Figure 1 (tube, helix red, strand yellow):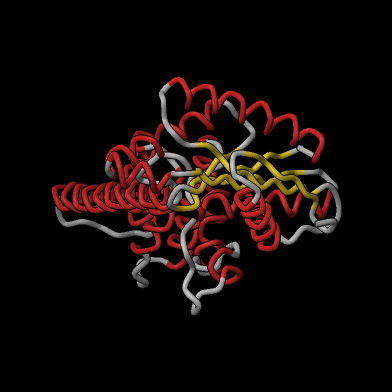
Figure 2 (spheres, helix red, strand yellow):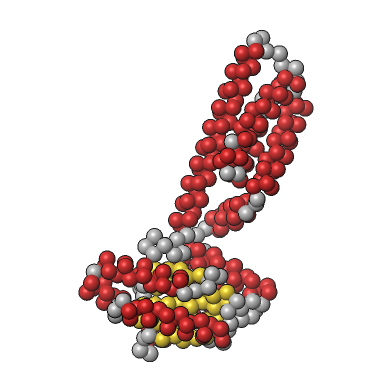
Length: 309
């Protein structure tokens, strides 16, 4: 277990969103919402936005500089569409801009000027599309890395808190049960001290993948830090949690013994079956249950219900 300093009590360190500002949560929700839209919906949204820009450009005539408004559908579709479809919009916006210009009575002294203007607009719009496509991919990759543990490749504490908040909300609204299991590896320090940190890192990756392989696809395992892991089991009351943890422990111990790793696991399991469950308190109490197992001799699991702990 990692020791928390007196200046940073468990409640403040572990509570969901403690080290992630509210603005980040809102931004992530917006990105998830937009990313969930189909390509057809996004393409139509881009066309409607372009139509609105064309209408404004036409009714304002040649006196007002409206070219920058065409960046709105370009930026929108750069984020929502894949690269091939997104690159359609610089062409559409460029042709629309030139067409509206001609409809408003702009007369060019030489056709080559029209060609030059069209090529310039197309080039600029295409560059904007490619730049925003690159920014989108960089942002999504950074976000992915921020939600996964570099050492083990499984979700980290941040992602776990996001999913736990969703489950707590569903329980409060629909009465669906879920369970949290706090897992600590017994004697892990001994591995680092005797075999070295490389062996310790190898063991962490082994255990993380082992747990992940033996969970349902709807379940989530995350690394909380050090040798601690935490499980989120949706649609799981205490009775089902006991069966699930017993099965998981049996399979993990069999694999650990086969690899001759001298470790075991202490697990605190807390179920939320109805009402409003405070995510912060659930993690804290699951951690306390796990400590009770350690004080009682390690290598076991202790179960509880939120509100009846």
